[in-house]
Structure formats: C-alpha cells, structure tokens
Length: 574
Image (cartoon, rainbow, N blue to C red; front, side):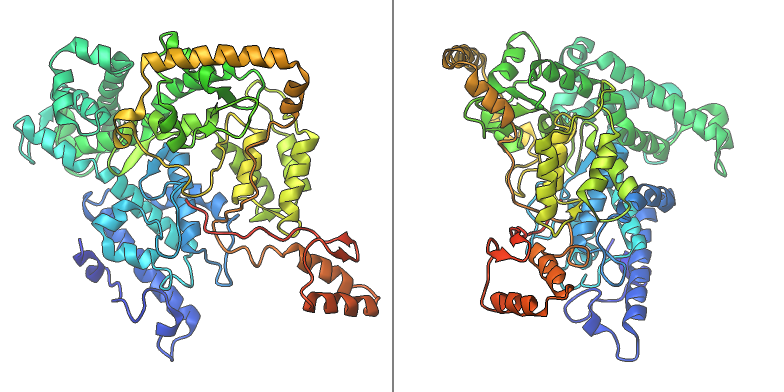
C-alpha cells in the first residue's frame, strides 16, 4: 500500500513533517500551501478508501452528514481547522453513533500526549506513512479542515470493515472455493452461518469448529443462537434483493441464477458488522433493566454485592471480578457509606459487554448519551455555552419513563462551578461537562474517568482472573447482609446525609479535546476586564499593581473574592 501515496500525488515529507508553515516555499502564501497539503491528504485517503474494494468506497457525503453537527461545535483555529486531538474525538463519536463500534486506538480512556498521539491502530499498521503525517504534532500544526476530517474517517471506516476480508478469505478457501468461484444461495447462507460463529469467537478457529460440530453446542454456548442464525440467513436474502434493485454492469446472469461471488459475501459481512449493534441492542437493554431494578436511589449505581447477587440467581451476566471491573472503569469506590458500587452506564459501555471483540475494533452496546449530547450540540451550535443555555435545553428533555428531568439545586450549582472555572462558559466536550451529564443522566451517560485510569480491556486480554468464582459470590452476598445490618444500627441520619452527597465521585480535573483559548477566558481575565471597562481609573491602577505583585485567586477584588483559577487542562483522551 505504500505505493498509494505516490500514486495519489502526496508530497514527500519535508523538514519536520506535514503541514508545517516553515516548509512552505517563500513564494506561496500560507493559506495556499495549507490548501494544497489538504488536497494531497484527501487524495491519498481516497485511494485508501477505494483501493481494495473494487471502487465500492465509503460515501464521504454520508460521513459528512453525521460529522457536521459535531464539527460545528468543535473549537477551531484561525484557519477554521481542528487539531489532531479533536479529529480523534470526532472520529470516535462517529463510529459510536453510526455503528456502536469502538475502534482500537481511539478509545476515550487512552492517554494521549505529545509522545503518544493515539492514532487508530489500523492506520498505524496498514498505512504507517500516512498515519505518521496525520498524528505528527509538529506536522499537523495548522490542523485539519472539515474535508480532511471526513476523508480520514471515511478511510478509517473502510479499513475497519475491510479487515474482515482476510478471515472470510480463509473460510472461503477452507470450503474448497477459489477466489473466482461463484456459489448458490444455500451455499452462501451456510457460509454466513459459519462466519458468524467465527466472528463471535474472535477468530478462535479451534473453538469455532468445536461449536460447529454439533447444533446443540451452538444453542448451549452462543446466546440467542436461533435469532443469530435467522439474522444471517436474512442478510443473504436482503443482499439479493438490493442487488436486484440496483444491479451493476455484468450482474444480470448472476442475479437470475442466484449465484454469488466472494465480493458479494464480503459485502454481506461488512453490512452485518455495521448493523450488528442495532440487532444486539435488545440484550443491552435487558442488562440495563436488570441493573436499574437494583438502583433504588436512582444514582445509576448498584452495590457490588447486589451486582453479584443477581449473578447468584442464575443470571449468566454480572460475573466479572472486582479487579476486572476496576480495570474497566465500572466501579465507584468513593462512598464510605454505600461501599463499592457498579456504575450502570460504565458497565454497559465496558469491553466485557462488547459482543464482538476483533483485533481492530469492538462492537459494543449503543451509547445512549450520544443522542443527549447531540441534542445539546444542535441547540447550542458552538464549542461553549452559558449554564443558562444548557439548562434551558436539558430542562426540556425527558427520561425513559417520559418524566421531566429533575435538575436539583446541587446540579445547577455544579454546572455554574464548571462555567466559573472557564470564565463563565462551559466547554461542551470537556471532561467536566461530561461528568455533569453523567450525574444528570446517570444510567445513560458514562462517568468520564481521567485519561489512563481505565481501559477497554477484553476478558481474553485481562486474563484468567476476569471472572468471579461461585464461592466469591457467596462471600460477597454474605458481606452485604452484615453491611445492611450496620446501616440499620447506625440509624437513618447518616443515610439521609449520604443521599444528599451522592456526587462523591465528582473530581475537578478537566480534559479538553482541543485548544479553547479563543472561546474561553480565565476568570481573572474577566474580572480585570470589568475593572478596566469602568470609570475608576485609580482602582484599575491598584488592580494592575496587585496583578504585577503576583496577586492570587482568593484575594479581594472589585467584586469580592476572585474566582478560582481555571484547572490545568490536558489532552482529552479520545
């Protein structure tokens, strides 16, 4: 694939990297140079998209429609471009919105800094030269245009689902078919039946063949196997119908004879990968409902003992070990009264509940918070908003039970504190606002841990200790009985106090997916502006002297104590 870049006319790297202003020829304006580099980048990405698919490229227009609402609310530089961190964020959101797919390398909890840019692993492995130019911090100084972002995501989408080609080729060959073979409707349905077993087993050929040896193994070891098998059969029929409605040149005889080639099979596999999360969402909602019943306080949390108690009753889920749940970021261990709790939304989005675990991507439960944040983005239309504007939008939302959102005084004050830390505005894509959304919608929006505090580790990657033993379940349930007795002995006052302090997991650390310096001002800058804008020149001089002398937040100013400084921001790990 390295030859693609030469074919696409992508200029060789000059000096330190890609899109560096100092590399531009003196006679060429900066804007012209940036535009030329973008055109070359997009041409190279287009080659990636169309290369191995016979021209069946991902539609950039479809990508643009999904990306545009997010793009409008991202911080941009003076060239109307976003930086690499923002591109990662947008790409992650795109895959979660469209397919509930978590692309390896774009995980929200992955730590990202100047030395670890967090590129998608598919790009890094298959097209490393392009990936380097995309993520190189010095080379991407001028950032990426909307079309750059769209082209990058379209190429990445192609690579994600094209990655199924090698395993399908192996299965196709195993059945004795050559690359040019054409097969019947029934043969293709059988192939799809076998493929879904391999797919669900993440390429474990030995395990898949064992399951395929007897029908009862499939029913015993693959949840809802009958529905899965019916879905795969239906996908073949659906593909045949689509081909009849929109035939390509040369397809006439194959359509008439109901014959299919390898590319037909690959298209079906890609379609299944794209839509599988929607098919499986009912199972995710069952998990959520089972946990919600135990969430008697409505905090989006259940005690670890109750979590394991559900497993004790014969539930095949809820068997992850405490150590593994901690690694996934699914635990809240901040409450001395409630003890260790499982966060419902984080558990649902955890890798242990991603039904498909591939080398390059995971198919997970639908992220319900995407719709909530999308509504806020559409209403605000920019990177930042006042607390009042956000509250106006959220107050018009309803819960799953069609009840109005209850925004307590604590939640309102917490949002204002977030705004105060940013000079009066709330960055829509920062960690603090994501944290606030979690406490407003605790069962839909995940609690955003600090970058590097958790990971999207699958059970196989975690190792033998990912599950809890039956004896440990019994012990946990017994411990919970003792804990409940202690609560009753202590009386109801502590419980009432704890209910009021249910946001014990809140932390003040911010993470932003880009440079908000043009959208936000530090609170001390705002206070100083108000003073200088008044008529009291003498007061302005005093304030200026205090500033020069190293005055700190908390000292008395013209409007009382100065606001706390903006928390130090770092790269948003997406």
